[in-house]
Image (cartoon, rainbow, N blue to C red):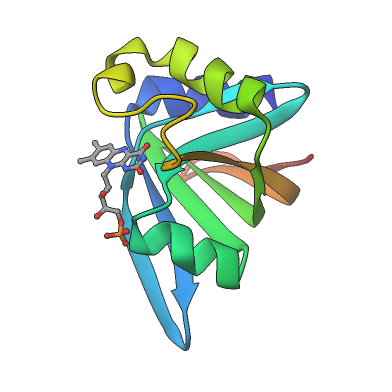
Length: 130
Ligand SMILES: Cc1cc2nc3c(=O)[nH]c(=O)nc-3n(C[C@H](O)[C@H](O)[C@H](O)COP(=O)(O)O)c2cc1C
């Protein structure tokens, strides 16, 4: 899981796909943080992405860096603990310009039943489950 976090942080941007009825939706994201042994992302409850995850937690992210790409497929489950939100905002202090732990909007989701696959054109894929 640390390797996944490192790859995503170094890539800087990943693309998060969710399901909206029968329509896939995808957008750029950047936040990633390990807290309490789980891999988290951050968003705001006002966003469509949040509503999609609450109605269907199945999600996949993809990032590309230095010829390698990473996909993480699984479920994104909200963790409503204040300390989970605080850990994320502490990892991204700039986000505190827009979000805080107690604003009723900030939320964090962790990956459950996740399969991370590292791929490249030159090597066999490697899979990690967490
Ligand atoms: C490089 C980059 C990183 C981003 N990271 C995040 C993020 O970590 N969390 C977030 O909620 N929005 C992030 N955004 C903004 C979302 O992509 C944007 O709000 C998007 O419209 C949300 O998807 P939705 O419209 O389907 O709700 C980022 C945007 C960019 C360009």
